[in-house]
Image (cartoon, rainbow, N blue to C red; front, side, top):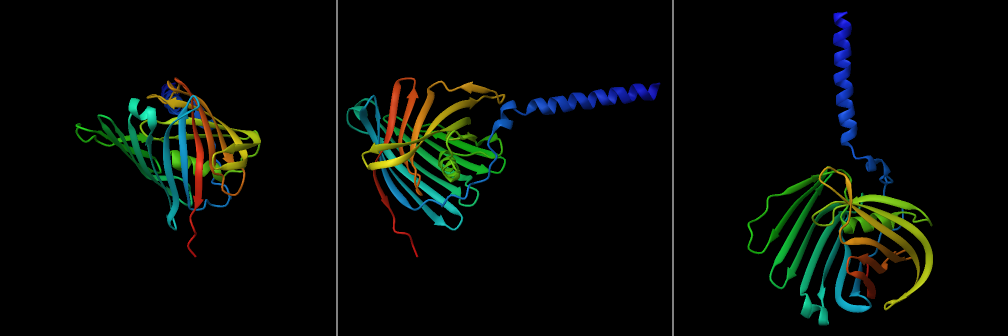
Length: 270
């Protein structure tokens, strides 16, 4: 009888531990897309210019340069800021440099600098197989210790675009990934709405239309609504390049947009 009681107690402890382990994994994790990178042709080296705006008015511009800096590394460099009346109201200059693994399309590291009128914020991200370490510093403050976020298979914005671009993107397909762009992690749900023809300043294109929704991952790994971002519609070229053409995002102040203004493909090295 004593042995039976000990067995039941031991079994009870094991079951409780197992239940705690299972409950520790977020319920939404099983809904994430686990497909490997697709076999779509890898992107060509390209330089693009985008104009940004709000309520139909141009408020900023940015230059981007995508390249393959070695056999195993893709690189994205970007620089931009507010312009015109918007700059008089809100001065911002920003730079970005990100590296991604050319085989896995996973992020390696990124550095982002935001220079406002009275402060500058620098964000350094270093990615591993188990998560990311973030160092974020602000003008006049002490250097911040690395802040880890442990979650496997993370993307940053650069690598997320590379990964989604590589997929078939069939109509009505849904992709769900975890993205860590700067200081917080989000679950991004991307739905392929269909195909249509769009015109932007850089030209007219057959395009793939995407719907993008995000939820913030809280401290206890619960999903929370984004306080400022509601949803976005993205058009990318429906060709071998799959270049972002236009983005319209619904945020707390209304609709903001980014539109391809100019594009130039670098001559590939032989």
